[in-house]
Length: 467
Image (tube, rainbow, N blue to C red; front, side, top):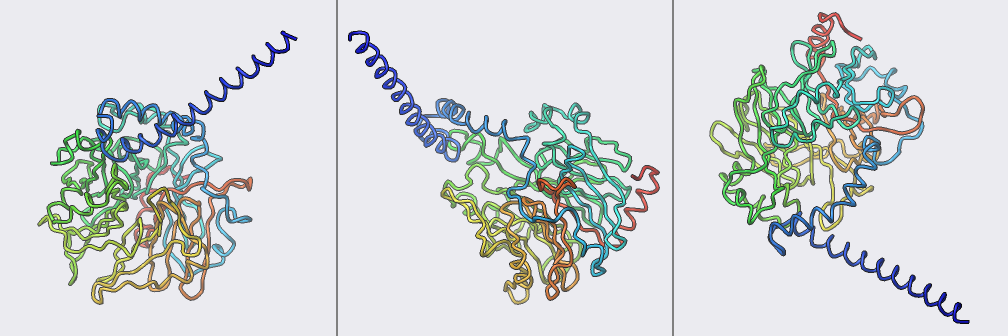
């Protein structure tokens, strides 16, 4: 009888200890999770001071870091597996003659176990060339002394996306991995570091002089109110616009926060509360202006600041913001000049903040066109976009071609669409391998006009190493 009582008591004690431990862990994780948000997204010293706040953050982010390590091999897989039955280009691509020019298709390739770039002739329906970078070799050449590049030594073919490849006149391409130095790759596959003075991300564009424009990240900013780490998180980021000459030297750099503050627009940085406090700008596109019109001048820049849904026209020669608009787009990407009075914006229409982060299925993405003459926004492609359920929550690109066609990359879902305002879908591309299983990410593909593409192909062929 005593043995029985002892056994029951032992079981009860064991259950009580385990239950206490489980409850304690739930309370501790909830508590640390709540407070880490204050230290991560707000002020380092808001509750515990910088030192203790940093320790809490390190502990509370262990589950997130473990999850990221476990799932990183799936980071190239589309957010949802959509578009059943479509692999590569649809049949209509080969039947359509509505769109000439070339496509620099940037994508993850399962068969090559890495991110690649393919050049397609849209008229001849033919693949011209492939760039397949070897990041294991190039990672050794990245300077780890430059801020942000500590992780570059861990670059793998799967993790290193070939972002927004930019064709050069000599047949080379430039790209970043969305958080890296600028890399250059020849048609023959030689990969080198083009510039690693700053941390480049997102878009790459050229102006008519051959200069290259890219967003860059500023950490440890020296700006007033930002450099004081007692009041601003150590992980606070500012972005800058960077201009490089064709040789890869930086010849101009300017902080976005500084531009906005200088133009009495600092409210769009400091007036938005805790939302995106670590990354209040998130510059994702720079569109150089190459000709003067009634509304802008050669040398101006259209800029897209995602985290405050801000698109603005900046004049570097005078440090003036000439025009700006917050919305109607939400967390947009890709601002383009359409003609001498219109610009287009790829509107992600992302609802974000307070724990929400989604694109409404009934609304989806859009490509609004802002007219500087009427100061109004039109939605000329809204119907055909809605009919095709375009809804990438992040990233995404659009290019209006002529009067009736828009080319859209639905980046997070691995799809490209050529859409006609009246005729609907001209063709689709879905980044699914021939095995018919998963759809994979795209990496900001680029449309080239017929003339630009023809000159580019000519240089590739002169290299005598086309695939």
